[in-house]
Image (cartoon, rainbow, N blue to C red; front, side, top):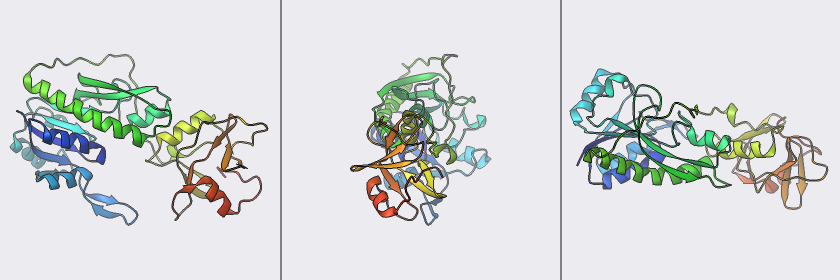
Length: 312
């Protein structure tokens, strides 16, 4: 049995925390990011991991800076043998890496060395990958470059969003993380260095990255919207007003005499939008201050001018 310090912050880390608590090991503490403003009212709230740790009666360490000597002392006092990490949200300074004897073990949602960085699933969808996965590895100073301890592969479904894919990976990845900690504790895991080829990077997507460019091919638009769902949230404009967009549906399509890129066209019970290759079908649209609604409902209530064009 190993003593564990779990490090994580968002909801995607919860399946791993629950799995580790239910394992043969002892979770002696939880490291998470400080409380932060959230939601429309921007009220300060604890992270999902902090809330779950409180429910489980686990000690919680909220660290504004991991370089604070007091943080190192608090971590050292816990006497953890291993520190599993899932989406903690900050880089670990070198002075902390040698504290657990079995190391800091990260669960990363890609097949490393592909998509190192903060947004691997989003970039995998943007790139049109057919498969993705999860990797456990020992954290080193270089970003997501440590030796691999375990991995799993997941197929990307045609209509997957970042949210749906992360949901599956977080659950299967939780089992992988427990198996990895078991193997390290038993002394049977042999780390495997990452290959030097096939490296790609996945920086966090900005709000501007989530803006739909209607001149792009339909498939690229579809991938961008799915990659940005639920965060940072795909969007476009109409006469300078920002509109949030849900995933497109179904497939990008070809029509006779397609409208120019961004132009709206009503077709039976669907709303078509011109793209760089034919048309795509709008799914949900959310105007400012309103609920998300089917695109056809939005169009019927918006009183649009003829030849109205998104992206203006």
